[in-house]
Image 1 (cartoon, one colour):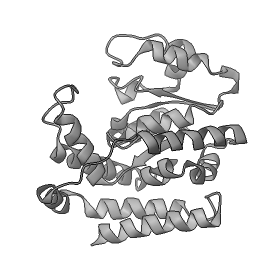
Image 2 (spheres, rainbow, N blue to C red):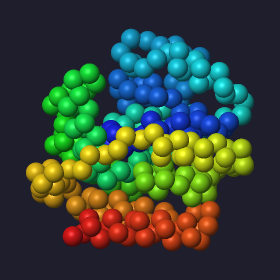
Image 3 (tube, rainbow, N blue to C red):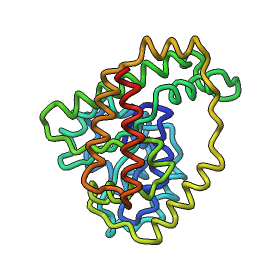
Length: 264
């Protein structure tokens, strides 16, 4: 799982890990060479065998995560790291049959989140990684995703729209179910609905971007890459992938409005 940093990858794995047949680690091999990330790294024993220069994440958190899973029931085991988008081809080559999930979030929100963290002296986020850096990384994530899809390697890749998922996760369940080949029962659906309600209540209010930041977005974001991304999302949303006709119409209207803005 990948996508621009600050696009919701951490939040999404919290949802997916509620499913008994899915296990997604959190940046378990973020410092590893993509050439060395192969299926054998995702055996339970190896996941918990933390070694130097693999990650800065907590082993205890992974112990707790794996403790909730039955290895015999798992159909998918993987890792989430936003910058995996730079290595999609290599990861696909080394992991035959893998599925890739990419997060898409509007650049204004990604860049604003970069700026908010860079401006907070207590955050530890590098000060240099502000608004402009957010746009650059966002552009890069979209370009790499497009190149991977258009590489004619038949990539199994699903793009998750941030607002559609976190705003109404239940409308995304049929698409994820088909993509991963797993069933989402009422227990999981109820848990996801509860998580979405908490998300809406607790998420940080985004600051409105000023004229200078609006100019930066207008002049430096990759409009063509975003238009491609939104069209790709729209094509995923055809064929009745939402849980209701009204949900499908809402999703299409949302993507269509953003696509019009991107084209302008």
